[in-house]
Image (cartoon, rainbow, N blue to C red; front, side, top):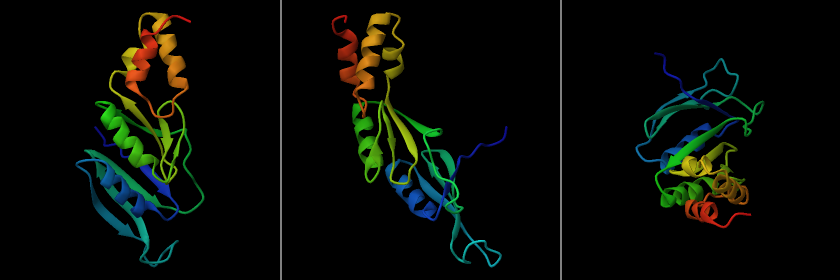
Length: 159
């Protein structure tokens, strides 16, 4: 089976982004950096691509130029073991970026992430439609997800 590697297009910040991401995620490292040569289209010696691994997942960053930018149509989902892990990734990835809604954020490079606690699917997919509705209403009012607050909302009185 072929390997699928997300390739992230940056203007010139590919190496900076890769260094940032490997500092945030455990068991991560930069595995290769390649450079533009005399053929261009960028100045010879500037970073072309950076291959890196985030906790076992391979990525490539390319410094392709300003023609393309990130948007929310593609995001990376981080399934967190607990609220402490949610808080950690939220704090690190929003530094210089922005909080969005419902567990979504944009990091300082414009990449979208979803930071989700374990148990979220169970709450949102509760077989009791009233519980699921209360949890959904609570989630829509959140930026960073708070699992205890979602559970409390689900357990709250019917509206």
